[in-house]
Amino acid sequence: MLRTGLLYLSRQQRIFNLIKNVGFARKMASRFVAGETIATALDAVTQLNAKGITASLDLLGESVHNEAEARETGRQYLELLDRIAERKLDANVSVKLTALGQDISDELGVEVVREVLARAKQYDSFVRLDMESSAYTDRTLDTFEQRLFPDFPDTVGVVLQSALRRTLDDVERANALPCRVRICKGAYLEPPDVAFPDKADVDRNYVAAMHRLMEHGRYPGIATHDEKIIAEAKRFAKEKGIAPDRFEFQMLYGVRRDLQEQVVREGYRMRVYVPFGSQWYPYLMRRLAERPANIAFMAGNIVKE
Ligand code: FDA
Image (cartoon, rainbow, N blue to C red; front, side, top):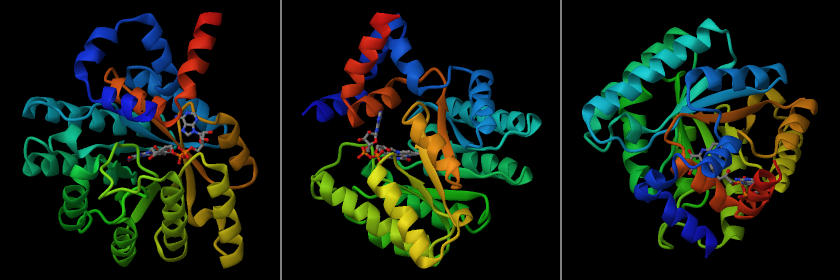
């Protein structure tokens, strides 16, 4: 119930307008978001890199309202890639096609993301297309497969969500290319005809997808904080003789830092997804929905300070 309520609130821009300057809300956001500027985000990446952790930077912002906003987001990603290279950081970027104009027109989204891909290719970097709600799954996968992957096979990858009933088919499609996939559980509220309502099914589907990606895919990103699934990935890799440099674990900035460091100590690769920017509200609400106990935890910490 609480999860549903928080995910509903994540889509209410009016609420963001009300709380964006409230100190308490900004402080909550700062646990999961690496500041509002490229400079603060790169400082966070520097600290991660020092611990042997790589990063994927996400400029926060979802659907934009006009072409100028989409092009401005694209421009900021180009600057971000330049600055990552300048500072020689071990980081790539994650983008949302809606933030690059997909909702205005597919053509605009493709044009802007191709500019970002061309710059990333120049630096031998990588761009992950984040996956949004199921309303976008087909559009995102079709755009990826037909209009991006053929020209940028080493530079672009997608995300699949184990909550969706279709995902094992999408895994086969991805492995056939083969392309790089980040597998995650899925952060959006979805109807039961497209997504599994029971968490146990989502977790089971995750493990099935992960096995196929590890065995037959191309350098999968295993994005989860679920210790049982992480243990299963390690077990499966050993059983099948899959070397630790053939996949990477991925976690979110501010979530289970202890586990992030432990995984690196054990000799596995770890990439942390580092969001930054002023549009932090929907992202924060999705993180709170994943673990509503965070609200009490953070409120307690903030009150104590
Ligand atoms: P689960 O929710 O079962 O949590 C397992 C354990 O992890 C919990 O018991 C808790 O201890 C800890 N945990 C999880 N979330 C926490 C939180 N917010 N705060 C504190 N502890 C927490 N989704 C999507 O739809 N599209 C996308 O493109 C992406 N991209 C993405 C990238 C990366 C690197 C990650 C790690 C995740 C995503 N996600 C995503 C989000 C993903 O779909 C999912 O919502 C979250 O990762 C939470 O699911 P877990 O797999 O961690 O499992």
